[in-house]
Image (tube, rainbow, N blue to C red):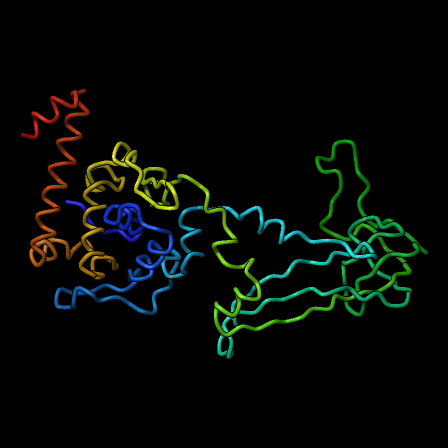
Amino acid sequence: MGFAYVDLIPPAILLDNVGITREGFARLLNKTHCSWMKRYEEQDPWNSYDPNDRDIHNYHKSLEGLASILGLRSSKRFIEFQKAHYDEHRLLVRPPFMLPAREGADYKFEVIVHEKNVVEIPEIIETLSWCKLEPGDVWEEVQMGHDKGIVTSVIEERFIGKEKQDDDEDEEDNTYPQYDYKLEIKPFYGVFREEKFKTRKELYKKWPQFHPAVQYDWAKESGSFHVMFADNCFLWRQERTRYYLDEKTFDRISPSFRTSLIFGYTDLIVTAEAIRHGAWKLLSYRGDIHIPAFLRDFQDSKVRHARAVWDAYTSLYAKSKAMTITDFLRLRV
């Protein structure tokens, strides 16, 4: 029979919205709902869903969520933006990074900017180290009462680790500190600036690098959706900035999950119909028990489902018999 499944929402959207833009794709994903943990009864409305259910599929995270669903990598521009650089002291200055607002905050987004490193006057410390140190090294194994710093002089060094034996598999054991040091270091600390934004518009105006349209490589032409039990079966393609369900999908999928334990064509159709009618109850825990009632209440979906069953099984039969397209069409008359 087939049943609706939450992983099939993206390919189902492409099935019914041929050549959709990425913005349109993201908007339609945002309108969908599911309930992973909540079970509904026959008397519950078809549009029932749990608003507290976590969005583990990124369906409600705009273009950023869509980029994750499509498996897009970071763009060259964003990779370049995220490169750290070294200051005059050979210390790392990290790139800006964005954080979501803390719960209860009066802003939505926060960008942390590493402005510079401040190097202080030298001091002498006694400390343990997991690795051998030399002048010029940056010591960051900060322990109680010490600051990280640039090593200017190794005053005393004592090896306290395990001597390597010929039959040792590992070159050294880094589980415990290897050296006991008395060092002269120049302590340093980073100076950071926090920028807070109440809206995405404000954020992207100041930091366009964080906009998903810039952050991700949207030039990717094809890929597959992550579908449990059917990875690399439901495929998408992009042509001239518009998205399609790749026709190769129909050669890879089975008639239905019930026949092969791999999600298939009738499952895709039922998912598309659940989305079309806003019947989120089908996309809930044990939502498959409501499918007979759904096909009873929505006659147009019943007709499409029956056609899908006929299409799936006649196609499977034709493949098993190595039929030509002409023979297949005669079979369907």
